Image (tube, rainbow, N blue to C red):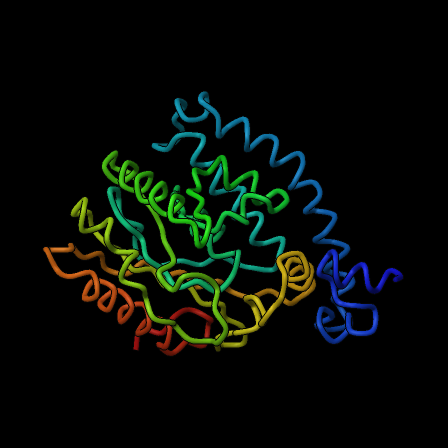
Length: 287
């Protein structure tokens, strides 16, 4: 059976024959793996332990510069995580105050970390994320609402949790495309994701994320077709840095519109921002 079979079939890693083609981006990849990997070990132990303490009741009660310590802990840890995987967060627009349903396109596991760099948001995510090392544990503490795909009972439970969170004045983010899908474009937004906005009459805020390098979109920054989570982490850690462009777009009210119209309006706003030209400094162009 041997190690190559084990790494491919059990861990999801490519074999030794294909590792250079699939994960080795340039001559500096080994250096990045060494430096970033060493720093990530510290980040995932010492920094994470501090963050988890601050995410507890004491951190939620203690306010610093107008924000609870728990929010600072989440945003700083998420920012550090992005940078250790070569992702430089950059955002524009204003994340709306709750109650608000944030709807975004979805390219990578880093999308959640990126949005947490700005502020606390409870995500609706696939149940598998709860099993991811380090990230799943922090997702639990960050208030992630897990959905088991194909399970009717899970869908009902998720809807109830999202409804309660919005009625309590919170922010909830969903990915209406239904997951990370193949292709480098904005996919159709599913109308069922907008039912909770109709029920609560909360604001809907579209958000757009794209990854930029050399003044254009870097479509290789997300998951490749069929790429598992751990190999993606390793590949990202060895790549040159990219700019993560997160744009919070103008919120709008449901106003009694059908779900399909709400989905189409949000999808159009996200697609327009995603396809907009990129300025020479890596910032989104205003032209």
